[in-house]
Length: 334
Image (cartoon, rainbow, N blue to C red; front, top):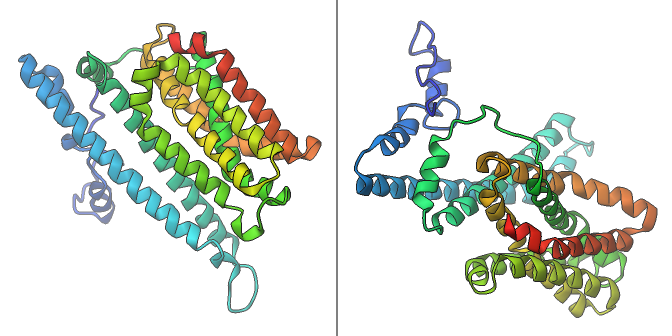
């Protein structure tokens, strides 16, 4: 069930180098040992309800600390790798560095970003679930769920809508990251050295929106968050694309960040409530589809921009965010 056998077949020589290295990464990374699954089994099988709740809270808090550690380390690693972006081109001989070096650099960036996104995704879901009245029971149900052995299922029904909206929102984030600087410099709003300012403002605004997200959802409700979030994001794009003043255009990036900041968490929450699919499979489908948007979307933006120009591609993003507004009532019901 929960325990994948921790009794991995050891070689005859228990002290072999391979087993020593493998065991080093035990506890839930590559070779989970008893310390990973025993706490889960104990909290699921405890009879006393009060003790069961205490053990669940302890497991949840430790898991959140673990995810926070992963996110911080991955962010630091991404920062270090990004700061060495010019290194692959710098060799004493003046030649381009060998392809394995460049491959390792790009793989490190991708691994770091995936680690950050995965940790953030699980953290948001744990926080959202914990805020529910029966949150502790929900955590235990997810930990104990057996159901379909498949870890992923194609979205259907309302989950398909939620997955599509998540992909659109993640696409916006990916487009700002990969194409925002080129848009600003191409429109003559800022110089090449200041091209990254737009993404910086977008990131700050999104972080502020996420920090205030719980209060905003409680006060406004999920339907209004989706509705006004989509409109605010589209309005931000309109400001960037129509106002030829750098300061106002950069304010448009802030509007995009604020508008998009809480759309995905609300969609994840709706995926956990819907009844069309089992909650774990629904959340996995929405998450996977969303991340596909942030990874494949920027390439699609480049393809579209070859046909209609980069401003035209960003107008397309604004139109897609209007779809979030139009579907907000149905999506929020889950």
